[in-house]
Image 1: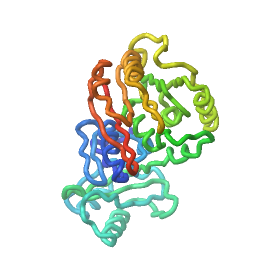
Image 2: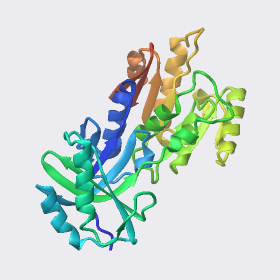
Image 3: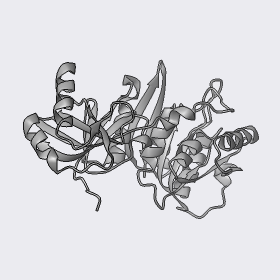
Length: 315
């Protein structure tokens, strides 16, 4: 029988320009009650670290003690899945020196039944000190899936950065199973690729034939099916609330501004199509969101130099 932990410690890293996006994504994925601090988050939810572009590892807390010797004394009850293992120190907010971290790893490793293997262990464990508690358990590392998706055959300068797109998908769709999602202005498919790589049921539309063609090329490049249709989101003949979630990156042009009446049409269509929406915009559109019937649940700003995007969660 699999041991179900009651607490999970996540270690994350992000640039200061993406700090607000990171924290919004983690609170959405890990639950409103999650404790978010510098470098780490604590939650009762179990999430695969590879889902987030910010998560480095997850420690499944199985043992807890007030000191390292006390913690080491408990490990004789632990049964390894393989014959080799490695213990790593997960850094949170505690001031633990490099030498002390290595000493703790060795002390706990000596209490495990098996052979320590530094390069390719069959099982990983992590230890950390958090609020005067010493915690130990299995460790899972995140894989930078989003990084592979940066190498798309088709790109354009105003497309969402891949890291941002993946975080936005997680904010829109914290629960994957049974959730139907739409990206009605999908462009070259950056959001589609991230969503589909996580097993999310998503479809895309765009009124630009070149964008649709580019999205199809990108999806095919990553071995993903064609889920893109040429259409104007304002004329989509779907029933109200057909989708559980919608992700809309409002069209952005360096040389011209989309008229407010067109923006309002798009937002009203978004309100009709889905129960929950994440809107990405470079402009102040709060009055338009209200006119379209949206309530703002949460928001953050993502900066890149002098360029800023707002990520707005609407219901």
